[in-house]
Length: 154
Image (cartoon, rainbow, N blue to C red; front, top):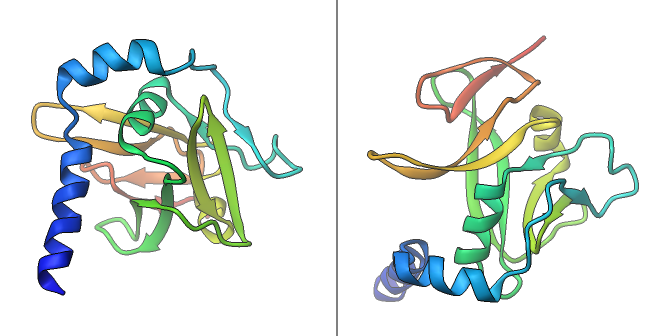
């Protein structure tokens, strides 16, 4: 089991580390232009919206395959009380909201959506790390310097 688990982690790491020539060259030919606004599959699309930046959409199109999407969850923990958790997933649950833009999908469960509605999901590349991040969260009062934990407005 451990060997199979190690292989799946390695495969995920390889997908995440797309060579620069592949992402620039093939992305120009294989992907349609990226629209600016995200859309939701739920009837109340204007209410509780999550916005995807162009860099988030581009990176998701590079690393996801088939029915994969990015799942955003909020859980208790971190140095400010709550923390964001990102993962690749393939199962959409009945209480999930799907936000799609340019073929890239971000899914948020209804409990987590209450903590991130109106926020922007971005992909940031820095010298020290590359990661998905939640920016401009109107539900957050303050956050820590790492950007992955926050406290909510009461």
